[in-house]
Length: 312
Image 1 (cartoon, rainbow, N blue to C red):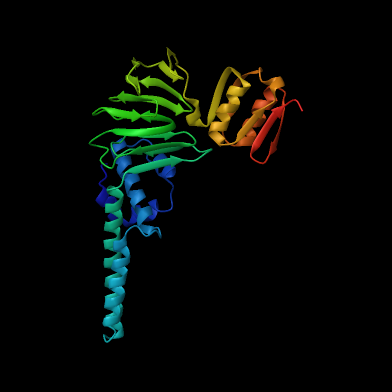
Image 2: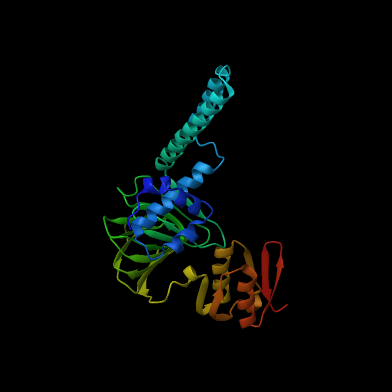
């Protein structure tokens, strides 16, 4: 079944069904559907949310309500039934006009998506491509994304790109170009790491001094001007709210958890050389710390927003 945006917005059953649901709930319901159809459904959901919110989206909104109020006052000589009918018509017209203003405003704005700490969120792009954002990550793209498939990323995200014109992911350290593929990008703290899962990915440093084309199972890391290519066929586990480590220093594990939860973790110097291997759940902070410290036979304490780990 093919969905049209206008039909969705005018369908009372769809409106009643979609309004109370979250984006993820709607996405899961249509998990086996066509990317383009899901994109239209998600856009319809966003428009419904915007139209029913109490924000004042434009100066035109205030002018419309002012005009309705003035016209209502000037027509008080009408009978009660006539006036009631007029008000109902005016209200319906106002809602329709406001919906147009909100819809137009949404369609004419650049899109900025922020995913907060301790959350993993799926986002659909206008071309049907999907982005899974890790915690504390942002993407921004132009309103005419379909004409120019280019966006900017801060943080970490997994992309599943629909085939079509070239698709660009810009970061503060470099640029990733694809035609239709899936890949992971980590761009934080002076580090850029790209892992190709399917298709081909071209990665270039921002100054153009380094460039490579990745095939499935390959990755490139650009850290402090050091460009390194390697094989990587590991599963992208953070999408499933878990992290897998293999002989990683405890300081490296704590850094990863800090990035996800937005908390400060301090490691006692006496245990800083310990290595951790295993899986850590990202369901909540205390569970993550429990799994890390129990495996290494350590203890921890939480003081305000700081976690201290050691052999207390």
